Amino acid sequence: MAKIFCVANQKGGVGKTTTTVNLAAGLAFVGQRVLLVDLDPQGNATMGSGIDKRQLKHTVYDVLLEEATISQSRVKTQWGEEAARRDVANFDVLGANRDLAGAEIELVELDRRENRLRDALLLVQKDYDFVLIDCPPSLSLLTLNGLCAAHGVVVPMQCEYFALEGLTDLVNTIKQVHANLNKDLKIIGLLRVMFDPRITLQVQVSDQLKDHFTDKVFDAVIPRNVRLAEAPSYGLPGVVFDPTAKGSQAYIEFAQEMVSRVQTL
Image (cartoon, helix red, strand yellow):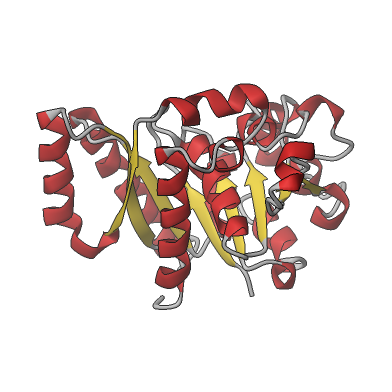
């Protein structure tokens, strides 16, 4: 049975999509079967996985409206010749595009509107070890579908003051969803991203996080890395684009830590 995790943070620009795509690639790299679900109408996780969102026959939009199943809609990543020569593992993607923005309005009047994704994932759970859901940076019906389908939340965050403010809101949201809609939901862990140890404030915030959340903070730390930033323009996760880069190595370590942490849940 697949472990289903949302990658979520109500603050924008904190590395949610980068984390989702590279964690998916990292998990595939260490031998896991992975499905990435893109719940953001921008479709950045889809494009970052090397899939053209404009060419998709079916997307997560069709799945939420129950006009197609995940089996009909998922697409396997294809990395091109160079990655194939390095025998880079692939994963499946349930993509998104601009159509998904309209799903917000259409879902409001439908039955089981917050459980559409959960019901669809039940049919393919045995096909995967991990399902990763890239949530939009807001608390919308799309994010709610992700949170209701998930066993846990992975929170990527920068070690900055405003990030701590946003984290408080997110923890409250998770508590509300846990109490009212999904008893299985919990915070799996906080991932420190875009980390620069030369900046004193970031080190201080990192220490505060570890003091307050203790074992909920992942040991892996993702450094600020140029190669990770360049990778999306090539339609590749950093882990595939340059496996030797510091950022890519950090995501592979994070994937290994995630596999071991799941065994203790």
